Image (tube, rainbow, N blue to C red; front, side, top):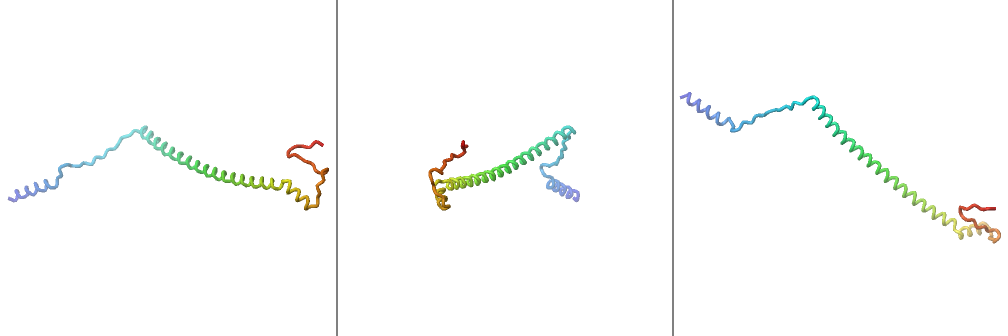
Length: 125
């Protein structure tokens, strides 16, 4: 009797404890030769270096673009300054202004003393 009870208990425990499908964890190691390992290492190194150089050149391009924008701003500032100075030269060299300054200094215009000089031409005397 006791033997029967033990068999029933064993059958129940076998039935309950054992799953239908067994999962066996297999570990596979890939055997690589030294040459293959070296090729893979070089390939990974090349990918890493190409990524580094790509990012480095992109950063340099951004720096050059910032420098270009700064120089463009400086050029526009200088052009505005040149335009203002050209306007001032035009105003200061006008005939009416020179005539007023001459009168303020006590100079009188006589036709014999007036000489017309063209800009950027040499006079033959």
